[in-house]
Image (cartoon, rainbow over all chains, first blue to last red):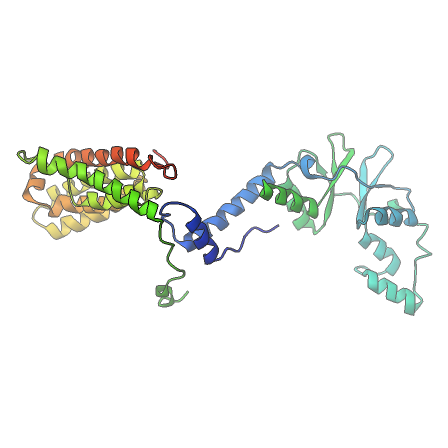
Length: 196
Length: 178
């Protein structure tokens, strides 16, 4: 999320013309003040926004027993790149993402989609069929990093940055999956605040 | 930024205010200074009392011409003048025979005290200086200078600013009291 907005002297000049009266502030002071103020406002809003207010509630998830075609189908249906994996009580036990699947297909860490496709086409090293029987429980990243519905957007930002991830399952007080929050959700929440 | 490069400045000057603002600034200053100088030259002419000092002209710029400025708010107008007057009179009394020292000490200490009390009001520096380099009449007032002309004068300008600056729908005064 942007913590600084670029404002030109011309922007400030035009704004000052729109406000009646003599404003006792230089344009550079105004810009500096605005940047600090904006950062504080974003911090305050992130801190006061609960994840419950911004998370996506209709979560696509898979069970530990889901096989690879099932996982890929679930991802394709929602055009998403990661899913929470839940047990029979709907508790989050892990997260399965594109990276986890690629790792299985390529056999090497950090292989991307195009690397895998190249291997399949040229090197005769395609593992697509051989991994089809693997389950979500086997390939998922666990334990899952989750947040509570009462946690703040600031907590999500901290985890996104600290763990270099893009989505976080959100659980209720009984640890049951309640939603998912993504970087996009945070951006939308921020834009809505701007519109208000 | 290198030392000499800093002297070039970093931005353009702010826009000119509207004719509306110019007219209301003129009217406020005319009435504010008018009331004080009428008292000074007509009502108090036969007494030893003063009602106007030079620094009120500078205050008029702020409280009628730049009414949204933090420097123009009531706390700054009254607090800045009174605190600076106290410091000015004290410096004169401490070093009456060394006007250069009393003057510099008065202005510098007034600025520091106004900063420390969140009452920075540039004309306060002049009020402190006048206490030292002013006429014999001013010196004769002693600490009464803090009350009249400084305290009463600043309050009178404040009352006029409250009446005049709030007449137009697009103007308001003050931004804050304390």
